[in-house]
Amino acid sequence: MAQVERRYTNRQLADLFEKIGSLLEIKGEVIYKILAYKKAAENLRAYPREAIEMLKEGKLQEIPGVGKAIAEKIEELYQTGELEFLQKLTKEIPLSLLELLQVTDLGPKKAFLFWKQAGISNLAELELAAQEGRLRGLPGMGEKSEAKIIAGIQALQRRTGRTPLGKAFQFYHELADYLQKVPGVIRVEPAGSLRRMRSTVGDLDILAAVENSQGVMDAFIRHPQVVRVMGHGEIKSSVEFDNNIHAQIWAHPPQRFGTALQYATGSKDHNVRLREIALKQGLSLSEHALTRSDGSEIFCANEEDVYATLGLAWIPPELREDRGEVQQALTGKMPQLLTSSDVVMELHCHTTWSDGTLTVLEMAEEAIKRGKKLLVITDHSGSLGIAGGLNIEDLKKQRKEIDAVQEKVGDRIRLLQGSEVEIHADGSLDFPDEVLADLDFVIASLHTSLRQPREKITERLLRAIANPNVDLIGHPTGRLLPDREGADLDMDVILQAAAANGTGLEINAHPSRLDLDDIYARRAAELGIPLAVNTDAHSASDFDLLNFGIGTARRGWVQPNQVLNAWGVDKFMSWLARER
DNA sequence: GCCGTTTTCGGCCCGACTGTTTTCAGTCG
Image (cartoon, rainbow, N blue to C red):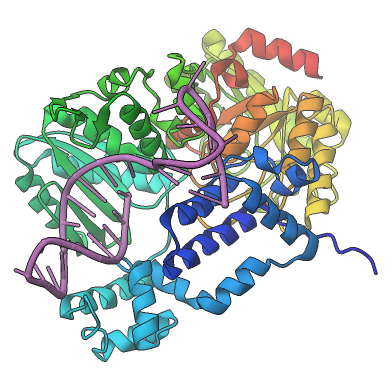
């Protein structure tokens, strides 16, 4: 009988260990074992190489948080497709109990209680029991708790999951404008995953510096779009808005703003690291202050002071994920991360020749306005009919127009003719090689047949990467946030090929893409692959999306010298000449 | 269950808020 090739993605493994952690939590296992499983899950999600490949190389335990026991479980899964430990566990605690944990304010203890004492084993049974008033008699439960559970279940049904970064920022700015007007509010800042520029945001975290917290707390819960108040305290409140976004606010006096902002920015794991370091120095770190063992407090008005007091370099928020940044900061030096002012060229945009809204001239003027020194016009190739792609004849006409516009704008900006060329389902490109060779810059992108099996779609992209006329792969995985996953690519192989061929990979800045993501961007940069942060602008306002791409690049520890469009025109042009 | 310039065994962060409590447990971040 042929050996079945079993494949577990890091995400699947992570989901599995996450489940184990939660089941153990309900079971009442010691907290550190639970934390170990959850930490391993999180690290697997953030790991740029496939755990299964690491297993084959005997390097599983190089993955942080993966020790002997978890490594053995991954191996057992790979060998047998099953996990005895999990099977035993689900005989003790039904898997469906995990549904209950999705309800706000309902954790493992209550899930266990409801199951043991009321025979509730899934969400539907919980809802029924709550509606029939059968929960209020249980230990530690009352009418209010019961009502909260009903509200929590209803909120769960409304909930649309994580919010894409772009939408989250837009709404944050609306809230910030509103909060700034509240008397006594000195300063409002984004915190949490929003400030860390994660591609999607769970809850919107906001920090306010205030003289008196009561006013801003009251104003927050009375915002006209609030549909549910989950918490309303002296320094912290949380609400749900009518757009399904959940948000929370903290208020602290200005002299404590540094510790408060540091705390509210997270991530949780980053903060745990910092507190460990504080403890080693005889300090205790909280959102309020650093406290010496004699109880005296060190106030930090600025976040920099928090890190400095701990003997660390200030860590940019985008790096605060406990992915080695604290160890780096202990050396006193952080990498010089990419900033938006570094990106002086835009290598990916669309005009009225395909699905853009501006003419070549209008795009050029927009780019000049934003200080760009070079702009590549990259309209779609013909086969992407939906976007009005260009055929070979169109390309010739477009070249003439671009030349004419170049003459008009003079040396204010350098214009190049490129194309975003479709990669066909068989891996061939939409234009023949001689046409590609005539273009100044070629982006190859996947837009269709994204659900091909892994081997096929990987092979398809490899063909494009190997084509010497291709300079850049656009939004490599094709994912669409928040819900549509990218193609099932073997990223290990893709990155190796890009490195070997010197083909660039794009970090598409559009908030519905942010593709490459931070994990692969970091790996790509480490492998020496040239990256490009592009807005993929279809209109004037799209140029403003650059910051989201910058955020993603920074989360990937990307530095200016690793980014094509931060190189400056001369270096970029000589790279192009060498590549082709 | 993981991990190690204080440890291969004994540690593994800190506080706000809520509801049910007569002093605290559960949940969240």
